[in-house]
Amino acid sequence: MCPWALRKKKESKWKQKERNSSIKAAGATPKESIHIPKQLYSDLVSHARNTLPNEACGLISGKWQTCITLWPMKNIEPSPYSFAMDLMEQESVFRKMKRKKERFLAIYHSHPYGIPLPSKDDIQSSVYPEVYHFIVAVEKKVEKVKCYKFKNGKANAVNIKFL
Image (cartoon, rainbow, N blue to C red; front, top):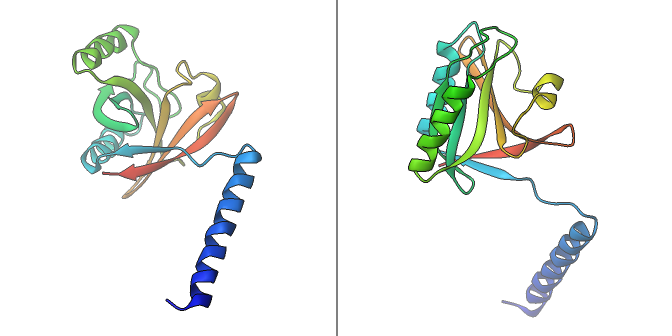
């Protein structure tokens, strides 16, 4: 490698380090990510489609930042605009998660014919703000899935990475 190219490479690395340290100093953090197998993603969308015209809901368990098991739940308040899960059914699923040595990682629900953005109700009524929240929007042949973390009354987007 010629000397001027080597110098340019060193300068580039130095600028990158300088930029990263200034981002950290400003208190910014990289966007959080969650990993999901393609089959689990497909099952999630299928559950949302099969529940139309009402909202679907359920839980997801896994390890670290990786989704492993989908737990479809019955919406006890069937409606295209809201969902509720039975507490006894939730407790049963939590016991099964524990037996599988997985942790409660996420809640999901659908927005039939809508967009995958959390409503104020979704954020304010969240009983589990520490877990991820997947929203599945299904419309005809198109589906969109987004993931969020709720904190201080706000929804922060989370990257979904496929396995």
